Image (cartoon, rainbow, N blue to C red; front, side, top):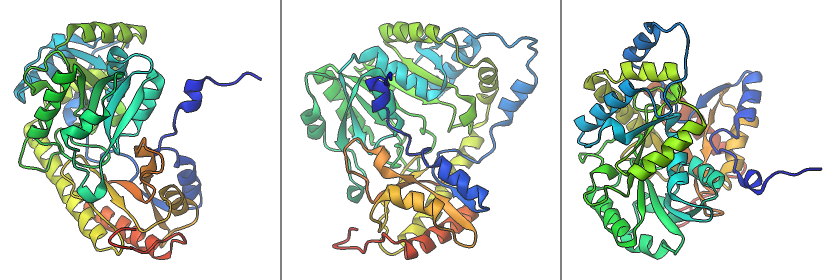
Length: 405
């Protein structure tokens, strides 16, 4: 019997979606589920998106150019300039979501067996993208008890090997909610210049920043113009996860040329969704202010409830809409499945993402979960009632020892 490729065998399951069959079974039994496992905002998508789609005069839904509709490239470049990123449409490739932009970036600058340094816990799909590209993730551990702060630059330097070609940071961070300071980003700039490395910035959560300091884009780091690659997406900013429109942005022409050849191989990004995004880009700034304040309120609600639960450890959360927290449990994978197949509280349960899938280091995150606070505050309150009840009766509960579980 023919077998699978080593690449297919190495591809990890998604910690965000792998429990979906258990959720479906719970729903079939009549259990209501609070979905805190996936970063799907529930705020309405901008009306400009829907209006542009409804009013499009197309009779045939044609392929778009491989690098994206010119009007969209021009408009998104204008948006970037409005927030201080000096780029033009020639610096932008429209991709099928930020996921494809990340894949294009890795495939463009890393070869088979090359290494990319990524602080962990990390966005789980980075591991999948790297596996598909034949690239090795070199994880750089951050810790919940230290609020998942970025390690000192000496830790990055110690992780560099002859095969290291890039550093990838998500800022603000998924799954931790950490926001890196301007000084930290400049230190990474200096390190990349010293060792001739690319710096890839996943900046899709830029507008979900609850600090007083603006998020520092990799594209603003002086001297790194040819080594900086920004990944962006409309999924979170405009609550358009299903549109699957993202952007790879860089001033390096060789990378743009390489990414364009990859884009040509997959033909084009989705046409109708690009038309909608052109309309969404007219959304007033008040939309983002209101959304950010709504998520700040949700964060505060979540933190207040979690910190009142015995044995739960919650770090500082400064951005995005995720919290990676420590629970008094034996195994996060077992606990998250148990919530779906063996527990309900008044006919309700919660779906969380086990944090083990957000680490590349084996065994890390065993007592941590990622919570996406994407529900309204009143629904979050209900979900926390359920989680608190679950922790009280979970068979694998562990008691705190020395401040940890």
